[in-house]
Image (cartoon, rainbow, N blue to C red):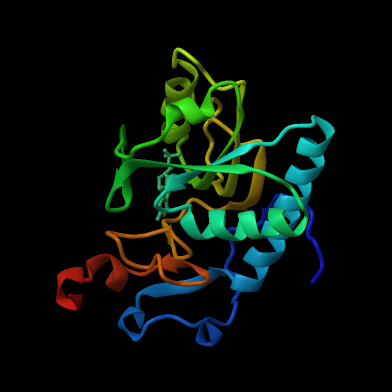
Length: 219
Ligand code: XMP
Ligand code: MG
């Protein structure tokens, strides 16, 4: 598998990737307009990110704390940690649960809803692992929250699988970006719409039927 240069730019115009080859539960039939990023592309980018991270942490002789921003980043976190292990890059892990979205709209309000062990982070180099940066609201809240503790981390860097291309001058950007994507609402590989679609290996653009679907019929 070839290692791509980062970030990989996913163009605005559809690339006509073959949606019929994707594996997903049958209840999602008709819920996607198109395949945006394939599983194979994700795996290649995860390896490239791991190589970049390993090189920089080796140079600064640092063992990072990989902080998974739940729930969306969970599959990316898992595969990124696997790739770092293959490179013999040591790291600690921590998990934080944050939400800023209701349906397809960012609420602009960020909540930390999960038990992170702040003592574990004191004096350490943190690498926040995010699924997607959209408006930057989550990071502009989360990073100061972590740095304002009595015993703050030494540094906070961010790796994100996706970054949406928006015309926002003051947008927070990650230190490591896998893909830049057009400003559509995307789902799959951890990214959900009302808790659905986290359980797919590829990333899709959601369709109107997907948005209108009543998920309570599945339980
Ligand atoms: P902000 O605006 O705070 O957004 O940078 C980051 C968080 O919002 C969620 N998000 C999405 N989730 N499809 C999703 O499933 C999307 O297109 C999308 N855009 C933003 C996500 O949880 C992210 O961490
Ligand atoms: Mg997220």
